[in-house]
Image 1 (tube, one colour):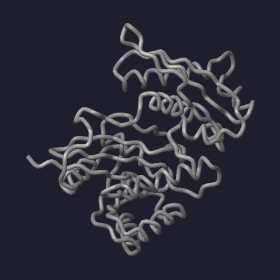
Image 2 (cartoon, helix red, strand yellow):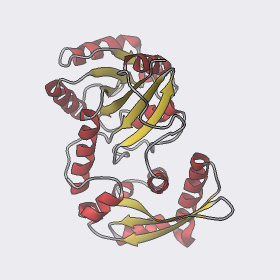
Image 3 (cartoon, helix red, strand yellow):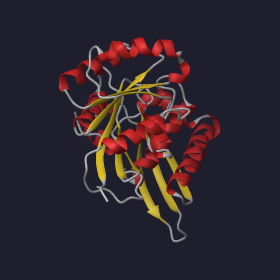
Image 4 (cartoon, one colour):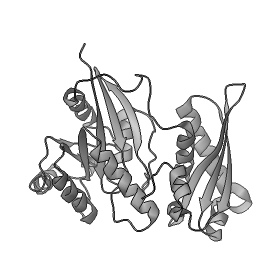
Length: 296
């Protein structure tokens, strides 16, 4: 039996739907999703078996103009994920079209001359007549092997993309056990699910000024796990908002993250959260390494 295995990077501007697509492809929550841009901060690997192929899906941070050390590390992680891939999927928000950040990604891919497939996402939000001019505007600038039109949210068109990927990856042995879902450690998954709830339950600048680190991840004799995590914020006001009146906000964040984590790890989880103010955490090398980013 001939097996195939390869890396497929999802690249694009922030909020193109990369995390939604990788979660749809794998059938589980591996990458956090929110309506806000720049949610994903580091490379997330999803491992998917399709026919006799092992598809290694790399969800990367959205590519944008970096300002902080954290931003530079995120953008570097995105391009590293693309450079290491056998195929890069350029994800374009069909409703937004070619905005400045998407154009910058197209320009860089054109210079790199890698294998690129164009994926127009959110096609359920636009008419068919809008898709053809958008496709031409991109393919006039960038050589792509295939074009796919889909909706990561509804799943329409995703199976066709996966079938093509399974057939086009290079022949070779599997690199991971067939029942693995990701290469991310459980500690990092726990921190990311807490951060997702911060995005979902707070507003404005707070999600971008917060990071989460898992301090302790201990197996218990009854098969459950105790997780202690710290949320770092930049300002005293952010700490007060995250905790909420009478601790209600932080309890809500913890409860929802605990439920998601229990489903993902398939065992009971006991999650304990602490909030600390740490000005300038997004410029600290140690904080960036702790959340899975190399210093940049």
